Amino acid sequence: MKLWDKGIATDQKIENFTVGNDRELDLVLARYDVLASIAHAKMLAKTGLLKEQEATDIVLVLEDILQYCNSKSFTIDTDFEDVHSKIEFMLIEKLGATGKKIHMARSRNDQVLVAVHLYLKTEIGELKNLITELFELLLVLAEKYQDVLLPGYTHMQIAMPSSFGLWFSAYAESLIDDIIVLNAALQVVDQNPLGSAAGYGSSFPIDRMHTTQSLKFSTLKYNVVAAQMSRGKSEKTAAFAMSSIAATLSKMATDACLYLCQNFDFIRLPGHLTTGSSIMPHKKNPDLFELIRGKCNKIQSLPYELTLLTNNLPSGYHREFQLLKEGLFPAVENLKSCLEMTCYALQNIEVNTSILKDSKYKHLFTVDTLNELVTRGIPFRDAYKIVAEQIEKGTYTAPEAISHTHEGSINNLCLDEIRQKMQAVL
Image (cartoon, rainbow, N blue to C red; front, side, top):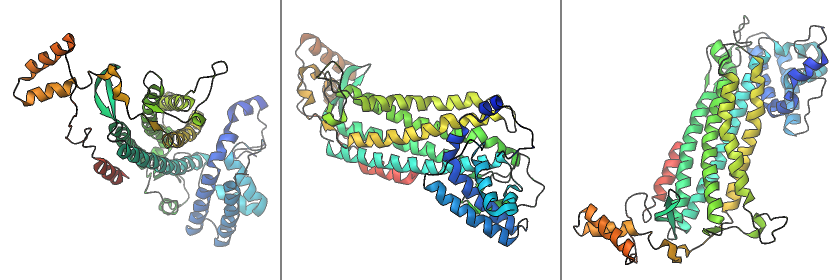
């Protein structure tokens, strides 16, 4: 069944090429298409375009279909072009002529638009929940290991003292930025495009505010052309937000891979969370973090993939929009998986509490020594030369203790303030 079938058979090669893997991808949108159809049917009844009994019958069947979709057993057979035609066929199969009325005052264009918007709203909410879980774990680890020092690096050279408290809470606070970007994406997708039809509205006296409220959108995308133009823009905006999260996870995964290396030996993973080599029996590889890094780097390319698909298209619908789903849907699942696995790994992480006993870190505290001389009244440049000379002569001795008291430093992590900042953006 094709919603546009006029009795003219399509060449099989053309059909295979134009449908592509849409049936598989549309399974993601099935429940959202049903929810939008329920709202649409109720609106048609309110405006008198459907009789009350017709709308009631349609809604009851759609609610059954929704349960079917939620059960994960819903399929789209090759007889159908997409999810929209499958659901409409199921309505007609149950209700006959009444089922044929559901497509009144809408198009597949605004059907897929509203389904994608509803999907992205849901997935953004799930991403925020997963980020919050990781954020809380990072703060717990920061507090637990706040007194364990580790070397900080610049140019991949030993630089200044850091701590696990700083490291864990740095990524926690970075996740706040990612939530802010996600919130911006949510504002973009939380606008109802239903009723824009093929992109130029409808001559039917529909009530678009009714479906906006039914589907719990914050607002309506008023201009019907603007609603159609949100196809591609919504996906791209969400992809940029996902890219921000992926960048945070990728950087942390890279740190973890370095810190797990025997040359660093800052952290360890239990053996059951590592993988081995086919010929080297001693290997315990951090494949988990390497794949998180790789998957997240792929996700960071997604906004540019979607940009290249859409950046030279004029207003109105174009079939290229179908290809947006190919990159977006798997990326969402991969990002959720990366967040879950980062949490899973960090719950089992083992921290080396005696890193700085290694003699190669003896110059880690030179800046602290320099600053101490300055507090005694020695000009900074003179103090710098004094410490540099000690290093060259091999007479430098590191201080026994350090005190970094300003906000966000080793001895003043401001974990409560970071938590409050997250609560504010959530």
